[in-house]
Image (cartoon, rainbow over the protein chains, first blue to last red):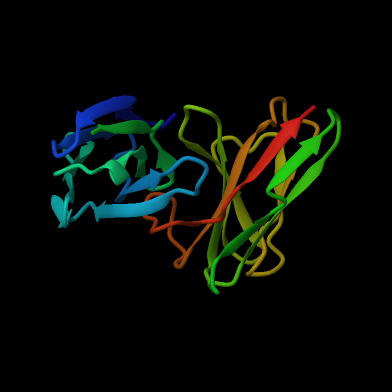
Length: 106
Length: 117
């Protein structure tokens, strides 16, 4: 069946450094690629999304890139801060990746 | 205060019992979804509904049932046929009636944690 693969499962970075999370998807018909952040015990919340007619989108310290030909997309967080620590999920429309636990070291 | 309300927050069930999880939204959204989240895993789609009186199976629909009699409500029943029902269940809604490949932002409830004893 269709799936979304997300890597790495855990990412530890020094505060102030950048973090990159990557996802690949199999359903070439997918047109919507959101990223959600889930803090411990809370609901997922959208942080950024991109549609297939766009290659890159940026919102302050967060950016997403999409390569529709290769069927992969990435989340980039620059100047990481302690409050960025959370689990991040990518999705290809309604199909989700397994999540990346991002740890920001002080 | 607009949003999605799930109840109960915690639920314990004996094996062989059916349970129903409530999901109500006052965002006037057309589409509603049920996801299951297990530890260390992403969300898996159980059922979704794009309009009243219509719903479609997601990726793991076996052992679950839903109804959509009102726009605001999308209850999920976990039946005794679900082999491993202990999980965290999340209800979501979105403002437009997308097809499965072309969706929009999901707004989530706070979730219901079901434990089978």
